[in-house]
Length: 346
Image 1 (tube, rainbow, N blue to C red):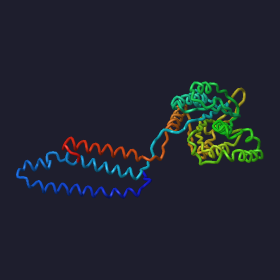
Image 2 (image 1 turned 30 degrees about the horizontal axis):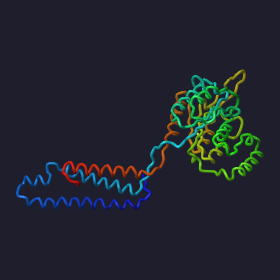
Image 3 (image 1 turned 90 degrees about the horizontal axis):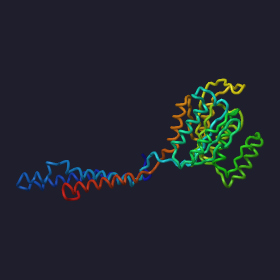
Image 4 (image 1 turned 120 degrees about the vertical axis):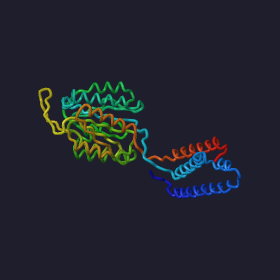
């Protein structure tokens, strides 16, 4: 815990002085009590039969002052708060390798089931969009709060050839920022045209877009699930930089075989390997995280973990109000007990 106004903590030095003052008053009370002739009257005055009652209200009052002084120093702590995320894009791989059965019943069905469970755990106010990608990427469902439409979009997935992970990120960004002129075709037109696009985009967005720190955009996030390495399309690391410049986190989920294997599909075969290194770099570049899911159960746990991360986040927050509330309750407790036991306030 830290304090925004730490110089106010010097006021805590007054607390030991109050304790010394309290002890001095008790001693004075003892000296005055010996003037009474009756020993029973002295014991009653000194409260020897209930000493703890005599000291408890002052102790509570002292704790109340402590909490009050700490509140004045404006304490700050990292606590869990509801997330500000309002839109989440699920970018899901539908390449032919997703029919592999190393994740039961197969990778695609396991991913679909996990995504549906994820939707069920999100708050209803959070919008979710679906981007399906293989050799190309397209929006399967625009961001919506209608969970039925999202489930329908997930169930409509059709397997295709190739894997364009970079395209998935670009299309996701274009869906989140429709007014920024993000065009996938311009990025795919070759290095020279990419340079030209960068200049044109900079001119077009000069007044609208300024790069921000990675992970600083808390209104949206992208979750990308894939089981292979990029075989076509935009460089995923360049796409990740676009996301990082806009502050959007791209959480990556790798599913399937890390070492790679040959998978047959409709009379042709292909070698597929999970490119973990690139997925980790994408997550790191955008201030997000990478998850590996080797089984259907692992995949379900990954989505559960992502749900908790995206609905609740830890933030550095001022908690002066909590200390002030504690001070008020302690003060009320001290005064109430004193009235109940001694018919006076402290």
